[in-house]
Structures are given as structure tokens and as C-alpha cells.
Image (cartoon, rainbow, N blue to C red; front, side):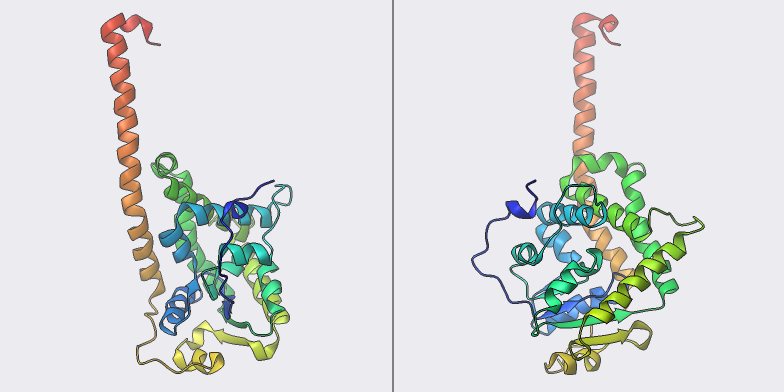
Length: 284
């Protein structure tokens, strides 16, 4: 079965990966993504997926999620050559591995030159944050009016479907308010963190507790790069997340509304034309 990643052109140059931020979403990853840029890396984060590459990368990501969590999908999982093709222009990967099990972690753990950063936080606090952000986006996919409008704008559709798949996988099919929801999220998160810790050699892993904070002094010595003059990126992640989501959604929702409205007007116009020419009896 041909996959979305197989449709990408073969890159002429593939940047060697230097840093993998293995942290899960809602644990300082947006700040680390911005920090990597300040330090001179070219990092890939879901922000790049959504705002830079759009539908093409969203389709690849969605397909990778299905392959990872649906064993009967018939879709081959991404292997290192696939990731290298997909992310050829980047030398740092942020957050993406946490969505795709341990395959990407295992692949780059074999390269002694790749360094890993892992932030962890209290699992219950992580679950609460995840429900307050990812779930709020995921439920848009099945809630009026976006459950209809998403079909009128490709980026919007793929974005909502990706968030829905991520939430279903992490929460094991539960929803906020379900008796097992918090435990399911905590179990997934704790299991993932434990596996990363046991896989990456200690001398190549910078382990950070989010409650202790992240700053330049935490990551720069590990990466062997000088501390920049700029301040470490803003830590108010929930507010920034909401702002970024709003910036992405607003123009796409507007486009979807215009297309939906045009279709409705076309249908109404066609119905009016038929009625005018043939009488109301021909309409159901």
C-alpha cells in the first residue's frame, strides 16, 4: 500500500539529526522548539506541520498515527528512512516521537551523535493539561459547526482529525468525565517516559523535571552550545497554545464558511430555478 510519505519527492540533501526532544506535548515542548531555533538548530515540531507544511505533512502524520495504533490498518509504520525523507530539512525533532511509540526513539538511539532531551512532569498534572488543550481541539472535530465545516477546508479537516486520533490513542478511547480517563492518560504518559529513560544512554540524555523549570543553563551545557543573550522563550504555554490554535483556525474556518455558504446558495439557487421552470411538484 502506497503511503503519503512515499509520495514525497526524494530529497537532494538530508540534514543530519543532532537533537531529539522526546518530551510529550504539554511538557514544555513549544518553548523548547523556540529555544532550538534561537540556538541555531532547525527544529521540527507540530507547529511546523500545521503552519508551514499544511495538508501534506498533516496527512503523513495522520497516517503514521493510524499505522502506530491500529494494528489492522494495513499501513506500514514509519521507519528511519521514512522519517529522514519526511524531515529532511530539519536537524532537530521536537515532540513528534512521543506520538509514534518508540520506533523513532529506537532508531535515533542507535546514532551515538544524536542527543536527547526529555522533560517530565507529574502525570496527573500532565493529564489535566492535556485534557484542557488537546481534548478541546479534538472535540471540535465532532461538534457543530466544525464537524460540518471541516469538509470544506483541507488543512482544517486534517488538523482536526489528527488531534482526534492523538486524543483517542493517548486516552485509550476514553473521554473526560469517564471513570478511567485520568488513569488511561497517566498510564500512557508514565509508560512512555519510563521507556524513553530506559532506552537512551544516560550520557546522551538531558532529563528535566518541568516543575524545576527549563532555562538556558539547563540545556546549553548539555548541548555544548553557548548561552544566548536572548531570554528563554515565554513559559506561559497554555495561553500561547490557545493563541496559536486561534491564529491557525480563524482563517481556515472563514474559508470553510464561505465555501459552505456558496454551496448552500448554489443548492438553493438550483432549487429555485427548478421550481420556477417546472413547478414545485418536481421537488421532493
